[in-house]
Amino acid sequence: MTSLLHRLSFLAGRLPFTWLTKLSFLLGTFWFSVLRLRRQTVLNNLKRAFPDWDEAHRKRIAKKSFQHLCATVLEFLAINPQTMPALQERITVQGRERVDEALKRGRGVIVLTGHVGNWDLLACSQAALGYPLTIVSKTIKPKGLNDYWMQTRQACGVTILPDRHVYRDLIQTLSHNGVVGFVADQSISPRRGVFAPFFGVPCASSSAVARLARDSGAAVLPVFLYRETQGRFTMVVDQPLLLQESGSQEEELVLHTTRCNEALERAILRRPEQWLWQHRRWKHQAGDTT
Image (cartoon, rainbow, N blue to C red; front, top):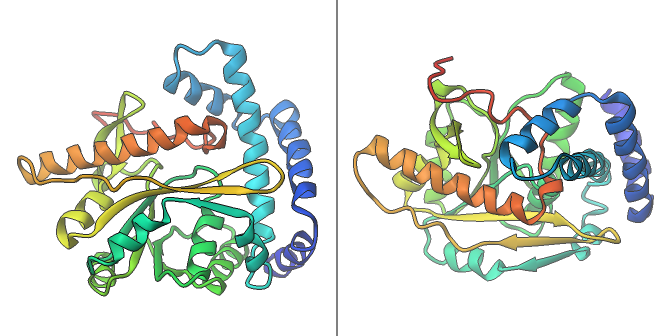
């Protein structure tokens, strides 16, 4: 599988981005209208997050979310060290000075992001520019796909750590003024996180960003890369989150994780069609223990 993906990457890297956009439109439309895999999950998630929207509008956003996901996959196939300079030229950045100002403090930076826009292009493009980026990533199946995915990121300069037993490594990375990235918008086992509202509904949420910020003193910056028209992107660096000490440690984790969720909500509201609605974000709700 890895060799097949490399051949597809070779092809995708030579196609105009506008072609990838058109192809993703066709693939996403077919997925939504014919295959229908995860279609009901997307519609249910949209109804949970936006109960005031009419059904027709939710279906329009759902269809666009499938087209967006196909575009994200095709664009990732086009990522490699050779194509990166051209890809970076397609990115307009808003707020990069916030990253540089935070790094001047010498305590590192925690980047809070989600499956909004093109999250892998965000990581690869910034690591290739020289930002010392470390991310925590799950291992996915099949192995060939996971190998290709990890190799592509590492080739662009991203340091990857597993999603278990790496807390000390992350603290050390921040102590050396590194950048740690978290894609923190997915469901997590209740035993590994806290319950915090997301679009008004409490659900199991990762408290890793809140814990790291508390223990390291690093700034937390919400950062997202949105897809625009004509194969261009906009990277938005929002204001640092103010995560101040308050109450007990457990109360503090819930409060700060809630603020992280709110930052993710604001990012999704900018471009709701560019979030991963196919994921069962509200799989675990208050009262669940497994």
